[in-house]
Picture (cartoon, rainbow, N blue to C red):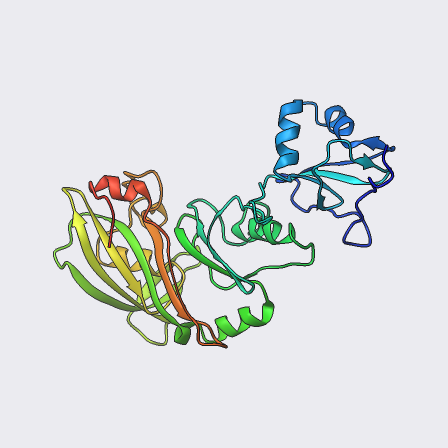
Amino acid sequence: MKENKRRVKSRNSSPRTRPNQKLFKEKKVNSNVELLTFLLDNFTSMSRNNIKKLLANQQILVNGAAVRQFDFLLAKGDIVSISPYKVRKDGKRVSKLKILYEDDELIVINKPAGLLTIATDKEKEQTAYRLMMDYVREENPKNRVFVVHRLDKETSGVLLFSKSENLKDLLQDRWNDLVQTREYIAICEGIFNKKEGTRVSYLLPTKTNLMFSSHKPNDGQKAITHYQVIEENEEYSILKVKIDTGRKNQIRVHMKDLGHNVVGDDKYGSEKNPINRLGLHARVLEFEHPVNDKHFKFIADVPKEFLDLFCLKKIK
């Protein structure tokens, strides 16, 4: 074995651990051995070709650092991990989630429907927050992300994370002043008599964690929703919806108030689900940076199933 094949040192004082074992396959080395031999002995479901591909993609990690040499010498106590992420040519890892934008301060993703933004009592592992945390920690174990705002589990679309707690606080403190556009695409039951309008009410929760509207200012938080019908068929309407306030379940409650539930929203009484998911997608988020006044506008493509229901190719 060549002398220059030295073990990779961990970037922490102790071997790196993974809180999410569902995402990373991980084994501890018990004796000095070459990497290929160790992988074949400990990850028996993989062939030599699988291993070579993972090495080429820098998905094999030793103590948190990517290794590409199949004959790399492992030492007792090393932690060998198989990452689910590929590495692009620029050396940056590819997230399991679609990244719309990333810089030194921000990450913006297109969150899929069915994925929580943050953990709940019932689900702590499979969340957008956890997936993005794993993603940024592939570059440096000390990296972190912070949730700036949230989307409901069944809502897809633009979701923003900050890479610093300070920026997260600045964004949240001035969120309603900084945000210029929050546009959603909604599929609703029935045909609207009034093709555009505005709904204003005060939202407050019930004991069963549902939200409902009141017209008494002292009852809850003011919610303002603007809507415009884009297209309709015999049973459904597809709308552009813009909100001035970001209250919990705001669009869903206001569409129910108008007598046109968002499809797939059984929580608020919808009985129809032609697209097999909630008919709500966060399409546009536009805002100003709180420090340098830089302007951002992010757009997440409308899901194909939304367009297909109305025989549309795209929405402008």
